[in-house]
Image 1 (cartoon, rainbow, N blue to C red):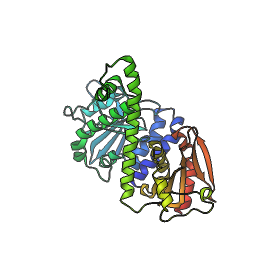
Image 2: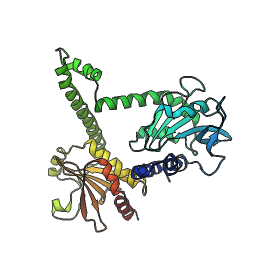
Image 3: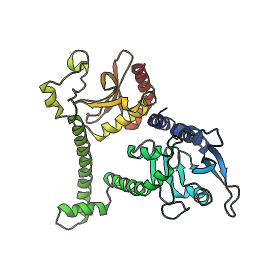
Image 4: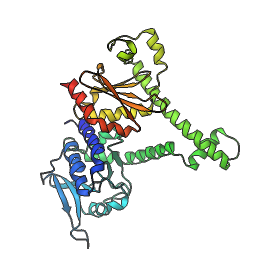
Length: 367
């Protein structure tokens, strides 16, 4: 399985099974071992590559174990400590990693709960594991810019020196991105003050803070939406214009494709692709990637719905996201006769509940 495909398949598995996982051992078996084997490419049953319950006595500490040690040429390269998928990761969970990091040759340590993988090295002091990770991989909210660096830790493409050399920039850029995202989601007073001072000359009173907190949050969301739309327009402008997907119900006939009519081009200006639609697309894509390569799954936005397609072919519609309604959102799925059924959803997470239907549709098109 290709690297990206393996990540997508594991992400779908984590989402569909994490609520059933009760113990640390179950987390290891269901999520962590597949990550080591299918994503990183190491043989979990070969002790020359992966040593479970790795022991290295540290000072007065005897018999302590780290969950996994990944080996290359007889040397420990990566240490991995696991917690249950129900636990949010905290640095306190990494006590054994800190101790083992200083007495082995490992330059990479990983703390994980099966969904989030925190990667550490020794940027601050030699042979002493940093307090902050240089790379954070969340399988349910993947930052695709990190994947080339993660690939360098796979068995096939192992390049430790390149990872270490990039680690400092990754560490701080990643931390800054997470901090900015958190401020966009829930701005604190200092963030609100910073931007209020750029546009408002009055005193920053309690009423001003309340008013501008809402305004800053709204402006941040609109800015992100506009950036996404600009990128989409730029990408589409570099290619032949694509006609929006039109349903039989809207046209009175079968699905069609071809150059857009003038009226269609006018309607295109009214189409706004939202972050929620793009996030929904990424979920459908992650599910579909268990059966096809990621690059085969694309999207097209129309005025009334957002379509997810296989091979950029509107006769191979995997799903439709009906997110333009003011109250209720729907996920449109298709049977073997290509009849669409709309399923009401209240959150994007509910898309995963229809993973089997999505995969069946993809397999039907790909066969």
